[in-house]
Image 1 (spheres, rainbow, N blue to C red):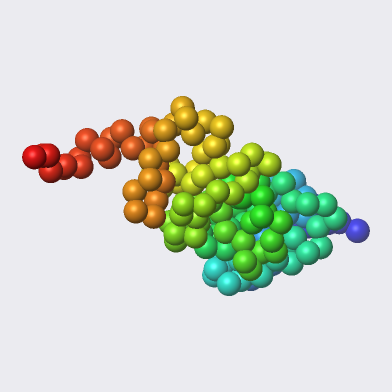
Image 2 (image 1 turned 180 degrees about the vertical axis):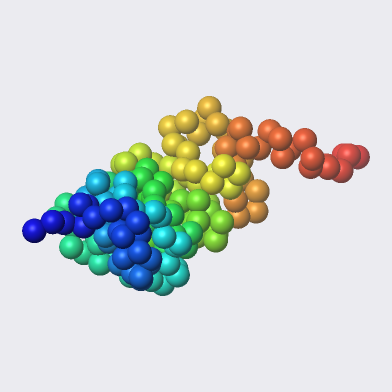
Length: 163
């Protein structure tokens, strides 16, 4: 019996055009050949995307190499999530960049790969606390900044003269 990968590309395209976006993604993930033969479908809605990835992670035999952020819907590596967020299931998980944007990571510390970090409001990344002396973490209101991001910003801050 011939598989889908043996069909002419035109016929395969006609079949995949009839699939729902999540079914299309599932088909593309079944083999490298089908992934190469099928065209990317438009992204499904955010809720459908989350449900698709939730089902994928649930049935995965081992921990996926990449995780999905529910706030930005991007697929990212484990280093883009704090250790506690990487352990959470999909509906509650968010990446460091989204955590900084939504002020879920403010002044506190978190761990990435067992390394204690703080979130820089400028580059929206986790910066190792071991490098804090080098980076010179600067705190303004509820946000922390690494030295690289603070330099350009400080040039635009107007300070009142003393005296």
